[in-house]
Length: 416
View (cartoon, rainbow, N blue to C red):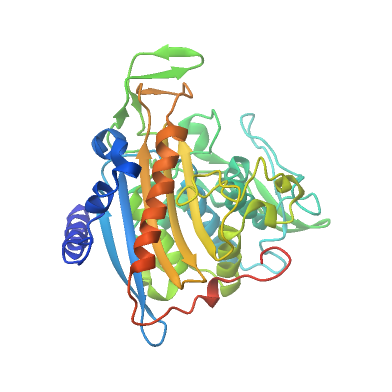
């Protein structure tokens, strides 16, 4: 499998070298704009930058073809994926609902999470939902709109650790492991257990599952030490942090997952997702929606949740406005100094579409859990400027056929 990755990356690099103009080299593009990228490009190894950019061309029948350019992509170089793992788990939760195929069971069915052990927490209400009750659909909305951690944890518990990882491996995502809840102090062993869950319609139980234990360990096979120190229970420990027991989701896997989600007809058979057309449209809508468009009362505070809140590429995670012709279908993550965004970006006015994924590490003092990371002055500006630079390339790129992007437009009360 590692050999196949090397072949793939060499092929991508070869394609980059043949591109005219800026020669299709992401490194050349970054070097040509020191006003944007000088700080990071002076020491890209320090910032552990990885970038993947896919150009999309359509034929006369609107069928897509892809050319992927890479910079410093290495599936074996670990970065902490943070909230980016929420997207595949959201998809797997929808897959599981379809697979269960129970009458009355869908993404809007009330989902009640129990607590079978003392370390577990229940969830029987959801103030963000119109009816005050939790559901798979509402959890996914919260994940895609504002990257809600508890919503992810509930879907992790519904799908289960073993099922998540075995399904991802069956699709060929071997550099991914999702083995713990987020913003949680549970141990590795406790994270192998998932809560009991009931789906109900009023007083009727539609489906229920007991606690589930993953009898297979998906922990990293090798230690993955990083940094010089970490803060644990307010104590500074002078030692590297071992990420072998933490989630992993390589940039290559993230980019590929976004591509297969957005272009299911182009996915190889083993990587095809078991979703309905309605599932796809639901995901696209909330991936591209801004919090204030959702109709959810909590997210109407545009100071707390501006349109760019979870849009790192092009808009730096804080843009107060985004042109109405641009939509970004993405999932971001930020933790431990790592910032990552994987996105399909469209411009309906200029008929532009591309896929861009990138990660950067900003932890100058090499200490974890001290909340002292250079997100605002290095990481987020880099991802914002990278997105803008690639967008500018796309504005100038010639296309033989204009894409029909109507599949990705959403009209109605939630999104204009």
